[in-house]
Image 1 (cartoon, rainbow, N blue to C red):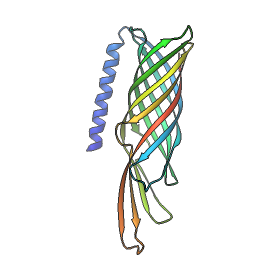
Image 2 (tube, rainbow, N blue to C red):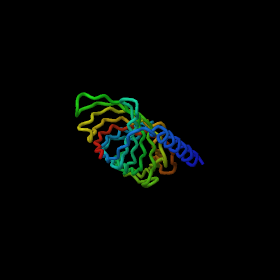
Image 3 (cartoon, rainbow, N blue to C red):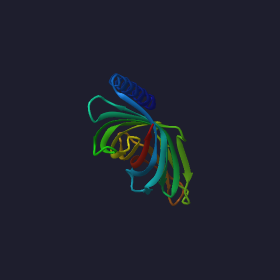
Image 4 (cartoon, rainbow, N blue to C red):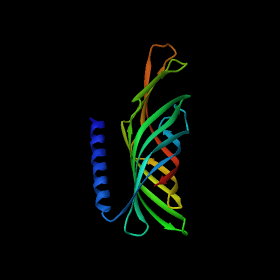
Length: 214
C-alpha cells in the first residue's frame, strides 16, 4: 500500500513536471544529447552494528535541454540507467535503477566558447534490480537488505559548458526518503534465542557527468 502511494505520487509529479516543461517551451530552444558519468555513494545507516563503505557507480542515458527566452535560464531533463555498488558488512550489492532527472539551470557566458552554470531539481529513481538480498554471516547471523521501489531525491550542481556542445557538471544528490531497510538477527550463546534488529539507510551521492548536445 505504501509503495503504491509513493508510485502514484511520483507519476503525478512526473506528469506535472512534463506539463510545466511543455508550457514553458513554446518559445524555447530544444537540444537533444547524451550524458554519462560516475558517482560516489555515501551510505549512512542508523545502526552502529552495521559497517558501511563508500562505493563507485556509473550512469548513462539520453538528455534534452530547453533554453528559455529569459537569458541564462533553462531546463534539463534526462532519463538515465544508473548502476551502483553498495557495501555492508563486507557484502557488496548492485543497485540498478532507471532515473528521471529534471533540473532548472542558470548560466552565464565567459567568452565565445566557455560558460558556467548552476542547477537544481528533483530526481525520481525506480528500482529495476533485485528488491532484496539476504545472506548468512560466519557467525550464523541472518541479514537482509531491502531496497525501496521508488525514491525521490534533490540534486544540486554546478558546471561548465564548452563550444556549445559539451557540458561537464559536478552534482550532489540528497535523498528525501530512505534508500533501503536492513533486517538481521543475533543468536545468543545458547543458540536458543534470536533477537531481531532493524535499521534504515540513506544513500547520498557525489557525481561527475559529461554531456554532449547535438
